[in-house]
Image (tube, rainbow, N blue to C red; front, side, top):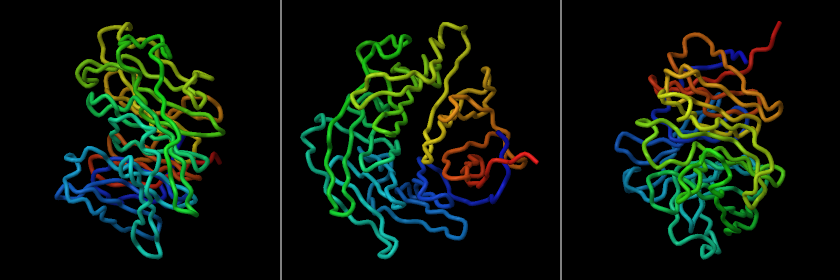
Length: 314
């Protein structure tokens, strides 16, 4: 897939997560110079920063904001008790209480993983074992925007035997990005090991489709045991797009077969596609969201964005 440039040099600062509001508008979770959470709201003709109202520094919080979008409206899940919906007319967030918190495990921590859904039920990744920032659990949140009501429906985790390369039976596989589509879950897992990926490499990665109970319906990607290939460190992170069309695959290392180059998996064709970026985007440009025809590309060194679209052949 070849991309062509529409717009670049949109400065946003450090980005933690992103969600598309419509084809030409996205919201980015970032933080200010004093390390307080903020939302950077970007479209072709609009740019604004929305203060989140947190008094603590972002790395001091037990729960990190989770972005989602419903009916072209930006939402944030603050913690298990409350979510926020943004009103452009009032230029502020309105809180909604989340009921049935007793459905969840006692320990419940959120870590930036944005939620993608084709309906009013949202799959939410969370941590429940206190082991680092890895999310290995998934809760379903039902949201009624009209009546400003929300409640937790259920929660699941993947069984250790879901992946043949999962060795540590004490902890379930990671759930790094998830989408609810046609009453099925699409889940990407960046392995299951507890040790540092940067130091030891990833044990495996996989992309599966499951039912709402986490039972595998189809395996779309399975890397197999990466440690069994040779002594080289390997690993790939995944991120599902707001368009529900792509899984963005970003290698952790630059010296394996991927050579540090991002690829995307098409849910329409079940193919992994190479990406050719426009010139002038730096060394390692990274697609972080997609909606309609627009690919949002993050330029980490410049901490800025570029808007691109797929180049159509002549």
